[in-house]
Image (cartoon, rainbow, N blue to C red; front, side):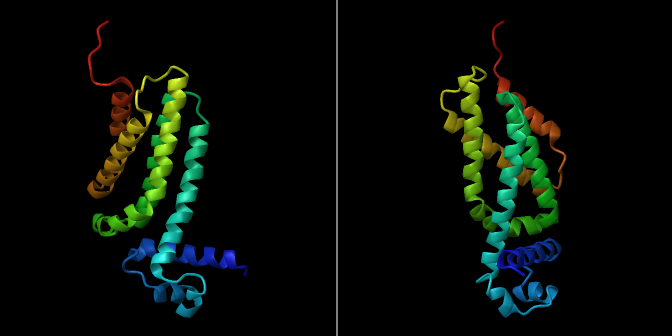
Length: 193
């Protein structure tokens, strides 16, 4: 089996065990045993469980980026691009979150690891939202004096809903997202007619 296929096989096995037992409770011995291999075999591909977990997060992050870009690129206005981004983002999060973080405790115990591994994905998200907003400003759809600041604030708000969704156990936040986007696009201030 080629090296990349073997790495993928190890990552797939780890993904299954992490979902079943959580990353903290899964050992390299567990992964090796499930593959009918030795722990030494795994060390040819990963130096540690942390490296394996980070590699898995990277692979899933790349899949996430592709899926989000496809959704956003399929839209034509700034508003529909942002709505598609939010819907796709939370669809992916719920799919992966339901897979890995089957309990509130499991999510919270892994939160620091999740956040450190997600730094580059956070940057991707901020840049994506900033580009959507900038395009909307150029087309006259949005009036935003500081696109970078608004993009950051938007991502911070989404991450807050993400944590709430996981820790509160409610994955049906469509009304919340719609309200957030309505406030984002139309504000809360009454305008003179």
